[in-house]
Amino acid sequence: MPASEQSVWFVTAASRGIGFALVKHLSASSSNVVIAACRNPEGSPKLQQVEKSAKAELLIVTLDTSDEEAIKAVPETIKNFLKDRPIDYLVNMAAITEGDDKAFSFSPSGFMQSMQVNVLGPALLAQALLPYLEKSKKRVIVNVTSGLASIGLNFGDKNATYSISKTALNMLTYKQATQRPDLIAFVVDPGWVKTDMGGPGAHIDATECINNLLSWIPDAGPERSGKFFNNQGEAIPW
Image (tube, rainbow, N blue to C red; front, side, top):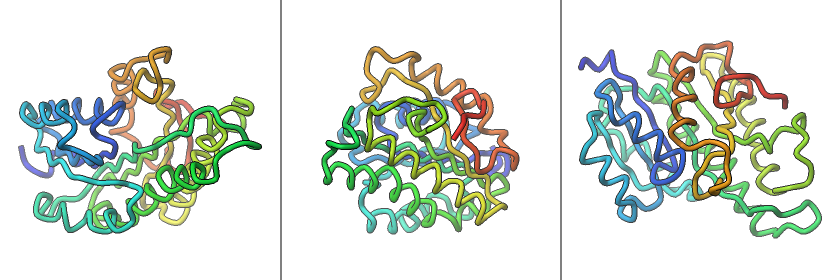
């Protein structure tokens, strides 16, 4: 397939949960080019199996999104694979949670680690990959957030550090969109998904979540930029 007809995706947290489900789905089509980033590719037999069966061009890269130097090295790592191709969609999926901690009793180290992974990591990766995004006609940054980041949805006191970090990610995305109106940057709450993080009691499975997301994200235009959506593309209150 001509490169001009392919979509190039960069996905973090590609070895587990929603990130893995997205990479698996995208890799099933030769119309996609996929860069799948995760901390330990060698420890993910599922991701290795996807690599063997992929119809898409697939590059798996090692990336710890809490490591600033590793993020800075990404453009060099992917240069030979992409050649002159852009990145059309950057999907910042990687995140951690301290669980159900509270505003008056969280761990300072856990708080800082949550901010490092959930906010600074996506910010620095977008900076590092900006030259590739600028070459694209799509120029989409999808920062994966949570409904817990919404004050308007009023989820109360639960999951304090995770909620705070994801609210900061929302503001980062708004700032990205306003600084660069030529980009399309938005945040998405994927919903409560049955993953290792979401647990077995979650509402939807990863396949349903990905089908919902891919029903609208590939066609996202400027009207989406700087806004907050659920997995079906419906607006969520800040």
